[in-house]
Amino acid sequence: MLGTRFNQAKCETTSRLCIGRIKLLRNKKTVQLKQSQKDIAELLRTGKQEYARIRVEGIIREKYLMQAYEILELYLELLTVRVQLVAKTKELPRDMMEAVSSIIYAAQRISDLPELSTLRALFASKYGKEYAAEAAADATASRWQVNANLVRCLLVEAPQPEEKLEMLSEIAQEYGVEWDLSAAARDMGVGAMGPSGQLPHGLSSDPGAAATAAATAAVAAAPATMAAGDGRPAARYAAVGPPSVSAAPASAPVLGLNHVQYVNAQQAAVAAAQAAAQANAAAQYAAQVAAMTQQGAAAVTHHAAMAQLVGS
Image (cartoon, rainbow, N blue to C red; front, top):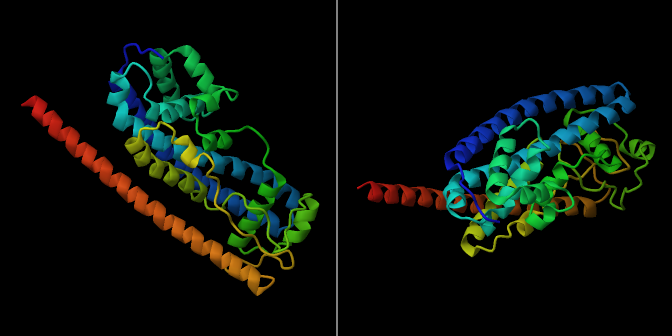
């Protein structure tokens, strides 16, 4: 991919504008999701199950979109730091391929972020329209290392019954709605209740939980990519999905957020082990994020010193 003249200032400014818009949209959607969850809880409370099942699809789609926002925000931050590298190299740097390709892929799928289209045009001008077209197409996106988790978040398809059922269960728990989970599973044709009485893992009801998991993994992958220069950060967290959330057992209705009942001691022990593992993973992610922050600060100090030296 041969480069042409690249507007570095426009790329950096557009990236920062997009980051700001993402933050605003995320805050707005968080409030909207909270209200939608309250509305669905009321539908469950009044026995309007069918309406609740329809409305919950919108919540699931919005949660996936917010995960996509988190991933894109990280790529845009990375782009602002490395925009000078992108501008000076004729070919797309290997360790920037995932970020640039993912931004191009998302540009035509997220209309709320018009800045992405501007960035896509800049990259198409520099690296070629054929590259931009292939990075944006589902059939060839993986060839250019478009983040697999981002692709999953932006898929246009109806949520699976298991996802809908678990989301409804979590909403019922959060708002203390008495709800027969087993009966709902039968009505929705979900026959995946396991021996432990738990549903398959799916989305978290926390608007930022799944997105934070993917985003934190992306931050953790970035320093390793900078050091190794292998250009394949996608493999580090493409498989990262929403965190697992255990549902209430089939033998008991959902009684509230802090009152999930377990069938036996073994099930409770498994849940405790899962919680401990998640806490340990969170601690590791936090340490990696701190290391990334230190590296970023060191880079800024270095660039400032170099600029001062050149100016003198």
